[in-house]
Image 1 (cartoon, chains in turn blue, red):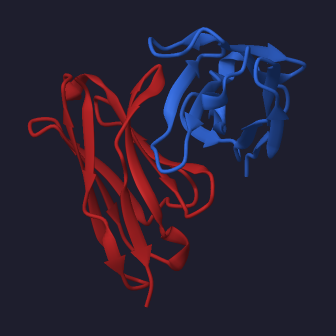
Image 2: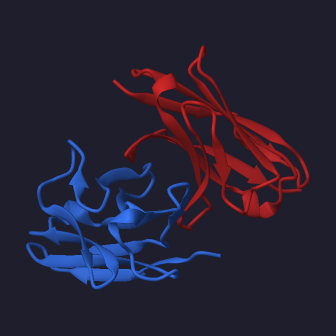
Length: 110
Length: 115
């Protein structure tokens, strides 16, 4: 059973920078896993932010960026805003078919 | 504008069945892969299944053999037939369009499995 692991929680100050990571139990995450990132606020459906490691969607704020870092997928928020407080999920594609979400990172802006 | 609206959720007894629907509008439905994802109360997201525009299908191991995904391109509808439901299947079920990303999601429909 493939497991995708994220930090359970992180705290960042307004205006600060924070990096969330996404690891795979199968080994290093590469671009071939097409890492995706989603934001979910309470009571709302998830919203896509990043696809294929670093590509943004039209509604993705410029302060969000995706990359690969030390064998993991990473989501970096630069100049964090209070409205960025949310749960963040990564999604990896295995064999181009199976999709597996990470457990989520609860980001607190304090 | 792209819209996805799920329906069909509700209360069902363990061992029962339920069929979820997802009505799509605002885009050419037949051109896109579609997915089902669920979220148990207070828990994270779990990918369940996808169906390609040509009808290829795959499932997460947790639902393989119990859930069946299908689509009706003429009616712009996506379905999820869920059989042999257990309490662990209690969740909000989302449909999502796939275009390099799961770019559009519905608001979800709640399925509660309880005696």
